[in-house]
Length: 199
Image (tube, rainbow, N blue to C red; front, side):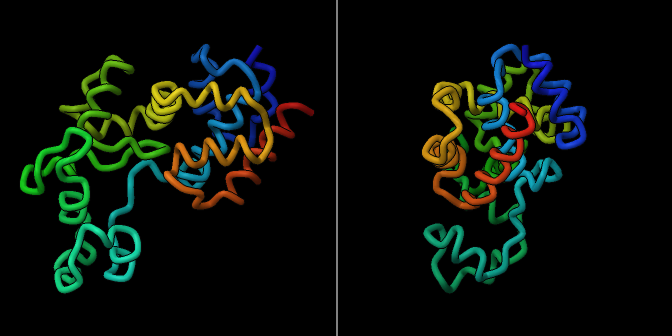
């Protein structure tokens, strides 16, 4: 059944992504398909970015991760992605402290940014390959699968099934983003994909 919707998205979504979706029975209709794709497309700059950009200026650090820094130390972290990750992701999601290097090792990868040692461990069980020992697998081999994992483990498919209205898109956006950043673009992408699928 999903094949007829995937065919309608050819030329809009990369063929490699459509092939992987065709292999996954949990994505069984246009709502799940379009909610997943619209979130992934927005978060990854149209399926181009598969790794978190942590190359921040002082202004960016203050605005995005301000609670992890005192003002007079910001300059020590400017444009140092590894150092930033080790600070802001320390002691959470199964990561060790700042000196462990886990923050950088398990920084965001995949279309919707799988982050933290615990999530990499759970995803390893989901995909059947050790992404804890080789975290780059998430960005290089499993960017879409890690997003499907996130939707599955957070029960987002149930929300997807509720419909194509803005309230549903907002609920999924909040679950993926933690807020409503880029909501207008997510709505636009969903509507574009859904229109193609159901015409």
